[in-house]
Length: 150
Picture 1 (cartoon, rainbow, N blue to C red):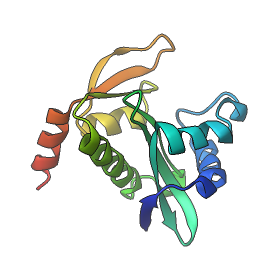
Picture 2 (picture 1 turned 135 degrees about the vertical axis):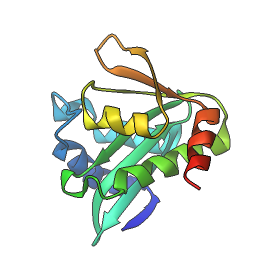
Picture 3 (picture 1 turned 45 degrees about the vertical axis):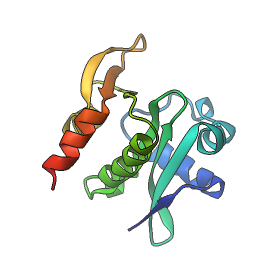
Picture 4 (picture 1 turned 180 degrees about the vertical axis):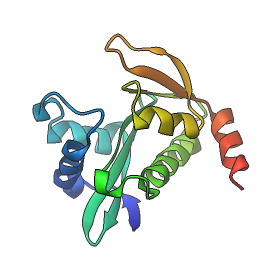
């Protein structure tokens, strides 16, 4: 597995992975056009990808301006192989290297993603109007979680 910073040329493969997932699916593929992904990668934050045999199998994008995780998706064939955990680590380390402000995200309830984020040290702080669970991660919680892995 190769983990690296995402490039604009990765967007097509990122969209393929985004549409392969079984949870947190989009009601329409048109809801997240390529231009939006490019905007997040080039102006709002940064992204990372995981490749296996020259094929993209997962990606993450963090929004530094709005202090949120914009995307973390893994091809279901590569679930539970450490891809998501490493993509998460890369984006959160990058984020907290730039700010110590809390970061937020939303995910559907009763999904593997909900459980994943709890294991990574995120705290549930409410429910968004769309029904997604609101999670927050503080620099302090991230540091404690990271130190507990050493």
